Length: 585
Image 1 (tube, rainbow, N blue to C red):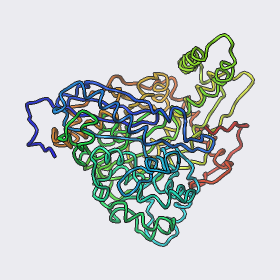
Image 2: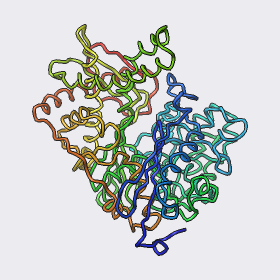
Image 3: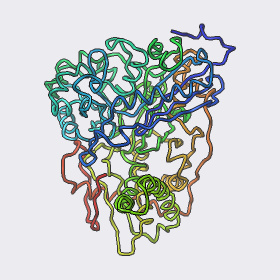
């Protein structure tokens, strides 16, 4: 393994950040000494693109490990060809989360073993899979009533169906074959890192941010919850805790070196250090040059809102209703706090899918166009829909539109996780237009963001600046200006097009010994900010009024939503509201 003494300080040193998103994986080659982004490559998951192994109506979203492996090899080989192999000194991987998978005793995903190749329960359970609603509610109830430590208290006090233990409980209850074959479970970021190093599952270095934010790990109780509690959750998990881990590691630490097999597959050398894995939002926050009491909003299909604060200043304070507070999960030596929205870009994509129904229905009936021409036209029109909707929505005067929406089409992540909630729209009339609805949806995701900022500040964590990264932040001026107006705060937009991958590259540079710590890597490798959105004073007051209506509407819908809840607090009040349309994407 390399260290700072073994690296020639006068030579070029390159690192690769690998960022696994919901639809694709991208690799970014960065000069670790200058921060110059040399090359990037993107690979879209072939099986996921066809929605294989997914049942959206049941909120089941699974991904096959072969999509991950194929993307890893394709993207890294492509960028690594740009420089001499011996100059690539580090690799780090970030992924979505919580996205766990059952593995055998060698760390092989069950879907890559005989008999499980087509079994969705043997695959990775994607972050937005909400099949474990009942299990999450059960975890919350048992954590409060079992007579011992409340293991949810550092997770915001509410455990979500999006997270590690709920998903495992659901799978082992639903599928006895997987329950019997699973030796252990791994988060996506850990699993890919293990593949690259070829290490031993038993002494493998697990991710601090994954364990702390999603798996109830905390140093105050010595790691994972006691076995008695895990067995209390589900007797089928009796042996699991002993096959997991107690120690966790921050993402700036080396997990090992590239194995001989993967060095050959990637065209690299075994001198390349592989860093401990992390989640995409945490890596993105590092690239966004996060500092104490900044909020970095990672805006894509969903959002993750990341805040760091000095541990000594936060002390024993528990921030309620967020997605965890973990020492070192973002910047080693600081407390990382996570929140977010289960649908952000996804909400807008849902509306696009609704109105593009005629394209999907009528084009296949065309006798004029070939199937290839039909597909090309469908893709062109689908891409143009959001562009034209955005233009038209920007022209809508919000004071003249009565449409109000909730952003819960994929449940609510923060504040107070409740994935059973549904989206809703009110104030529709015969004169309501598609751009008015689209604008209401954009406003809804911004109101959801405002609730998160307010929750942090109500809990004593000031938000001193807001930084935007991710696809929505880079591509939609309309969304970002609306967000600045609703928050009544400036929003700085990070320059890098691939912020999570750049953050992973920074972690890799520290793990490989090029830089002594993450803060130094940020200063040297950071790409700065492209622009700042300032709030429009003419809009701020109107949005404050409409935000109050949004909260009242949300209280009403939450009070009447049918189905189980993730044991979220009951609404404080309920008022009459206009008829609503509920939507569950």
